[in-house]
Image (cartoon, rainbow, N blue to C red; front, top):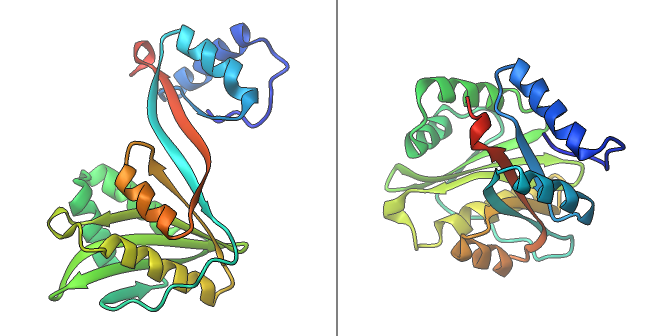
Length: 210
């Protein structure tokens, strides 16, 4: 549940109404919130009702005018679904068959321009990122570097290549999401010109879990 604008209905009525809608579909009711002052009352009400804070993250934005990175080496870029990209990510994240099928369906049905980007070393895939390009923006998703190859700047290289691709198709601005506790990644992104646009998080009630 992602509130888009303030409600005219009192929260004491609105929250149970939302819970009932999701219960009918056998779906866990989760609220996505951000640091917009208009959502403070809702966040406070959910916390008072025992809703747990979950997955706090930052949305970071890189504005126009930042330097365009140089082309990166040992990079494979595909503008259509890439089975090797899928294999690497599923293996790295330990997705089960059901989640992997759902994820593949989503990837195959991305409508805007996209790039499946892989980093290789010695013929082996060691990192990946998905870039989606739309209306002048480069969206960065699913950045992952194999644990044995971290600390060598491979994540930086993947992001830089995604930005290079974006510059080619007139998508100079960029955005990404990052766990707010991942200080190392946040420093990396700040060094590339990204700044925090806003903070967001989820709330769910353990009592309402299926």
